[in-house]
Length: 385
Image (cartoon, helix red, strand yellow):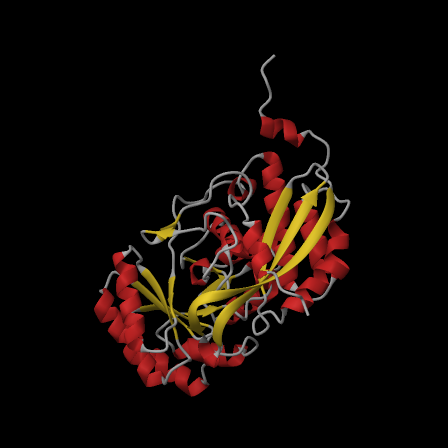
C-alpha cells in the first residue's frame, strides 16, 4: 500500500492538546526615534510574545505590540489578560480547532485585542508546524506571487525624509508612506511635492496622520497636496470622528483610509456605508488575531475597499511573519504591506525578515517560518509591572 504523507497522517492523529501558555513581555530599543502623527515619539518597542506548548512538545509563537493610543493595550495589561483569562481558554484544548479557540479568546474578555492577537498567532504557528505546512498554506494558499512593501518616512526633517526615500528607492522600494500631522501643515505639503519630484511619477506615495490633524489642517493638506499624486491619506482625525472624516471625504481629492477607526467588522462596514473611506488598514492587534483579520479582509474586499496590512513600529519578525503570511493569503492587498522589524536594533528571531527589491518574500518552512532566538528573548524580557 502507498505510504500516507506526514501532513495527511497528522490530520488523523490525536488532537494537538495545549499544556502550557506563557506571556513574555519584551522591550526592545529602536535603531532611531520614530515620529508619529500628533507628536508621538518612540525610542523603544514594547511587545508581548506568547509561547504555546503542546503535549507533544511542539511550540507555537505569537507577538503583538502594546499600543495604548490605538488599542488601549498596555504591556502589563496584556500579560494580565493572558495569565488570568486567555490561557484558561487554551490549556487542555485542541490547537487544531483554531477558529473555535479564536472565537473563545474574543469572547472571554472585553477589548485586549493585542493580547488575543498574540495568542491567536501562536495558535496558527503551532497548528501549522504540527501539520507540516506554512501559515499561508494553512489559510488556503497564496493569492499572489509577491507583496508590495511600503516604506514609512517618519523623520523630524524633510531633508532626512528625502535622503532616506532616495536610498530606499535605490534598494528597490516603490511605495512610500509620509507621516503627517507632525510638522507645520505647509511644510508637510512641501514635503509631499519634494518627495514626488525626487522619486519620480512612477513611485507610489501616500500619507498617514495617525489621528494628528485638525479639521482645518486636514482640509488645507488635501487641497494643497492634491497635485502630488497621493494614493490616500490615512486616519486624519480621532478614531470615533466619523462626521469630520465624512465631511473631509466629500471634498477631498485624495481618498481616505481608516486605521485607528477600524477595530472591528462593524467599524469597517459603518465607515464604508457612510462613504467616509476608500480603503482600510488592517492590523492583527486591532482585530484580535489572524482569524478576524482574514474575515475583515474578505468583507473589505467584498465592499470594494482597498486594503493595506501593517504592524506597529518595532514589532519583531515574529509578528511581521504573521502579517506577511496574511499578505500572501488575503484576497485584496491593493495598498501594500508595512512590516516594521527593521526599526529594531535587535530582532527576536535568528534570521530576521528582509525586504528586498520593494517586496517581502513569504517565509518558507512550517508555521510562521521563523526561528525564535530565545537568548534575545531573555535579554529583552522585562517585568510586566
